Image (cartoon, rainbow, N blue to C red):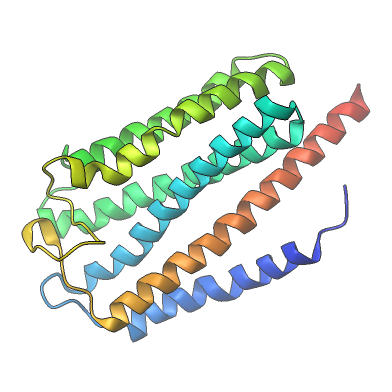
Length: 227
């Protein structure tokens, strides 16, 4: 396997530094929201994980399109790696949202448009790996996976815009605050923390996707050696 690129080493170090730093800033620097209290701090992880998951799913579609256009297996590595990492982030977003919802909505889950579309999106991407596992040849896996990744990406804008298209109790972050459903106005320190958290999760997703691509490359090379 090729030597680890310097850029990946830098990303590893940044991830190791920025993730604990972001957690410390969220706990210490960011003020406690007056109405919701300390549980509001889950919001920074929840939004950032949801953002990272959606970016990964779009990246998966880009990789799928790249494979269909070029038939180069590296694009499939990128697509499957991005979707795998995105699935982890989406699951984190769902469970962190449930932790926030329990004290605010007095329930772990409601069939709200945003929650429902997020759950559907996550299940669709789980099906992506079930589909790949049911196909025997790498070429067929890559081809079907690419088509699936492109079609599944349609759930990303649907999930993102669901709180603007349908009546919902889910807070709208990028909009004037409405206390209905637990929305709140962000102070400058809250906004700074959110932006930092989004940056940290973006660095982390790039790091994880790159590492997963390298692992896929190693698996490919080992398979060729066995054959």
